[in-house]
Length: 87
Image (cartoon, rainbow, N blue to C red; front, side, top):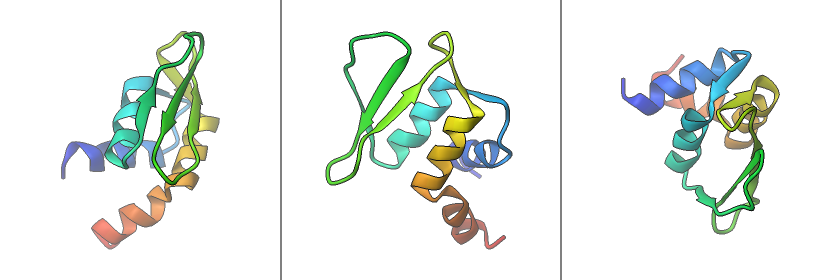
């Protein structure tokens, strides 16, 4: 099992918060790139041909469960995980 699989499983457990770096790794693995923003508590990710994702952070380091759930739904991570592991 690679690092992406482990991160997706962590997301699917829906913890209260996840490290922003982990969110960035998952989004980048699915083709999104972080775009420069004016700083602050929001980061923006874009992918050609797809709607961008704004990720609010807590203290610039954590992402709350609510936004992790949105990422799970938008990237269809549950389906992706089932296809890879047949669960």
